Length: 197
Image (tube, rainbow, N blue to C red):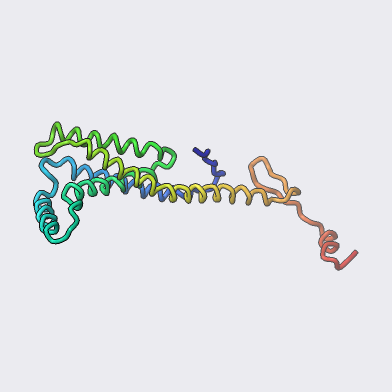
């Protein structure tokens, strides 16, 4: 884990807006997942019947046998948790390593609630595993973005420091922080221009 470089005073964090957007998207994804998984009865029951019929018909006409309803349902569970892992890691970049275990724990809580409290729903360990896989994929997708953000942050910090370093040594800083540069006399200007002496 790398140490965070502090930004000098007066330099805005270049990643703040992106983190806020990811936090909003994370909350929307959580609300969507909550809406899907905490409803009594199977989600989209009519659509599930249609999908089962389509897959059965497809299986009789050349669709590979491994493309079953259980496979599609597991794939949907993976896909549902990818944005949760992605936006979670982007929203809390300093604790990104906690996002995957948090998503796995959330999936375990969801499955427990479905098994104990929701009629027509059942909790499955397999769902926890595939949800966890989806969250892991999301966290891994966030890694290149987080690396890019860290570089941008460090460049902003280094750029601000290097601008301060450009003040000539002959300049002095007053107690209130302003920089006073010495003025050159008319004789020095004529000498440095090469027109005299």
